[in-house]
Length: 76
Image (cartoon, rainbow, N blue to C red; front, top):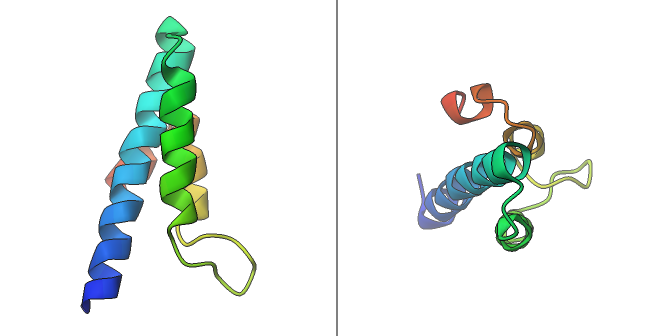
């Protein structure tokens, strides 16, 4: 795995964790900081390469994490 792939993998994994944190904060506590967490998630996702379909790599797993689907974190 080259450096670029390694960086993208780390960014993707951190974004999944942020997505899950957003979900927990939003749905469980409605913590007012959840908007900042969502913005951090979005900014990280924007760092990832875009596929031929015009979506960032791992887009579905990212979506699942923001919806509270723990399988997204396990599948990484």
